[in-house]
Length: 509
Ligand SMILES: [Zn+2]
Image (cartoon, rainbow, N blue to C red; front, side, top):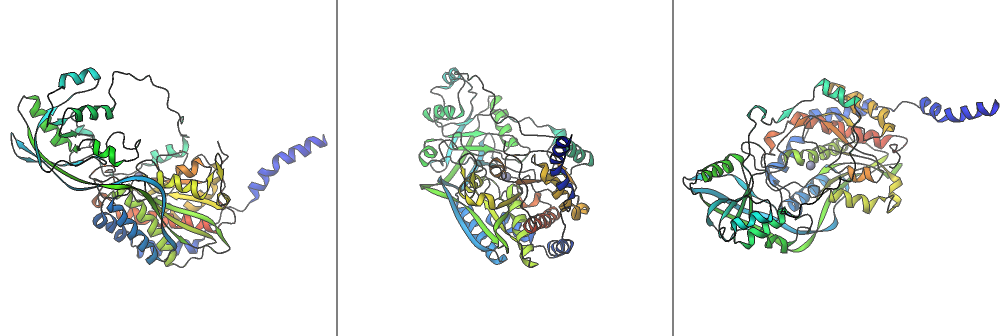
């Protein structure tokens, strides 16, 4: 009997200790000062405006991102951050920049067209004039239909885009109360990490093989349309570039590839289907780096006090694709992180833990900056952890567009529910209300999460749908959303830096 009581007490003890703990504290005075600085003296629009309008697109390793990284380093210095540095993390590949591009239809009528070269493709030999040809190649057998017929042609390789006129994309979609309730009640965990095996069809051509065939046939330019909507150019990179690490040789061995807006692509396609020839003029000048270079992250800190060896991190990725200034993906997130740091410095906080701001690169090519950073600084339980692994508290990331924070994704860690619920309380009036049960992926908190380090992505409204297209521009942003986000990110970072304990970790899977 006695032993049963002892066992029962032992069993209940952790629960009792947990429930008797003080609820997580909110420093309402700090919150008031953060709100005053962030809402009444915000510099966010200036920061995000400079990043998008002046510094422009920021493909990893490009001249543009190098300028943006230097600017970000200077900005961190101006804000008053310390240990500011541009930290190299890996041999990334060869740099690629588009320096000039133009495309027009010359016949049967003159039409200035809108498009963009795909990254990691070569330029044309000056201005070239060529006949457009529709090429429908899926299998090796399809190649035979075109053999000997494509010399100096501009080939249209994708199907025309069908518009859903009743469901055109909108720049702002607010989450409804019902949607937030569902997100708070429905557990969504990541799917299996390994994709189910597929049976390869040896007859189907891989995209790289299709380009190889077109190159061997003497094609001048490849045209394609990758979706989107009216006025959208969607198109990223030549096939195979990630696998060959953006190699100069492979870039040069490929073909000039151009993504064209649906309305112009479809028009060429329809004219050709009538049997009427289409002549186009195109010129692409790309600069391809001579040697492999290291990619870099930009880092700055607000030093801690009694727990200065422990770290709380905030950040976003500075790199984007090359066809737009990446306003929502992700100048917005970078501006929010910089503004959050500026707010904290401006109000003179003395955080217990060090607050570190990181602007990643290489995210768009596969979370390279954050993955290498986690490995280098914290390690991984599978491969061995570094001393700083135990000094890490939490990372907060923004990368789901430019919409207002409506809550935070729990990432499968029930241990933080009470803490985040308390920290959201001062921002309910801003619509920050929901602990979403989702475990979300696809961005820079993932390498932390995979290594067992607490890292979170805020739950956001849908603002700035132009991501990964030429339409991801300043004009699609909602400045008030971003001002609020900076205030919330500053407050979360501050509270995490002031807690007695580090943010609790979930058990490693
Ligand atoms: Zn992004």
